[in-house]
Image 1 (spheres, rainbow, N blue to C red):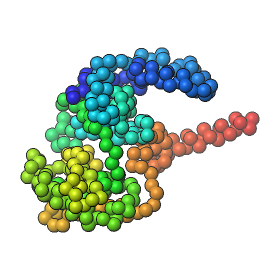
Image 2 (image 1 turned 90 degrees about the horizontal axis):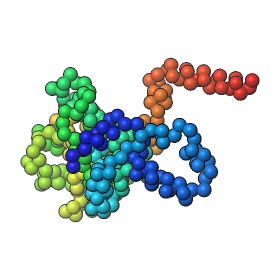
Image 3 (image 1 turned 60 degrees about the vertical axis):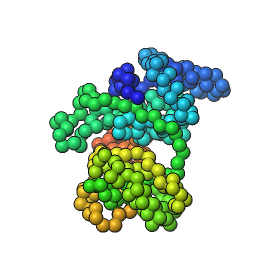
Image 4 (image 1 turned 90 degrees about the vertical axis):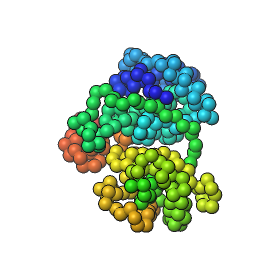
Length: 307
């Protein structure tokens, strides 16, 4: 469906205040809470009641009807990107939306969605000054797909150049999966066979990226399923490959397959989006001045406490 202008304006400019319908739902939930601290917190002065809450009855009705027709839950995205960086703000830390409220919060909180709006062609050689523009120069589409819970060890990203599948890697590269380590030969085989039989010479582009899901039953005709297609090149994430590397790899040899063999626990690749940018800069060493300010503030706090 087309993204309405009022929703685009809400994503771009409105403060992060829940729509009125969502605030009503929250109030109803609070009636069942016995936590007096929560009550005092929500009644503090300067609450978001002072801000005007948006309302989009037509859009919310339409979205809720679509969700109901798709078994009650959907996966959202715009033309190119899903709001993966904002999943932490949603219930269960997933992109599963069961209402228009869930959808609006994810779209509003996502930097990936902002990129789709302001600078989707930033990496194109013919982009206008290769800079962001105030208004989208392309029609924005909201895509809602029926939600399906799938195993992360079955998701893979495939790279196709000149109509040749030449590189594959696991989609969730920050995690080790025993299934991938033990079945990598079968995984590569079924993806290659699926591509040759169903995608090659049928997809309208010669260069593209394809995400697929691979099941455990390798002999099943439905073992491999397409999840999505993406642009070949940045801003599509190369995951376990660098794009400079992908442009140099030969396409007429055996398919390159990469998987995470390190069993060490590591944080999610989207963890940085859960923190204030100041803390990200400090933890990465990107802004030592902020670190010094933080230490000085801590020292002053201790002095005041001892006085």
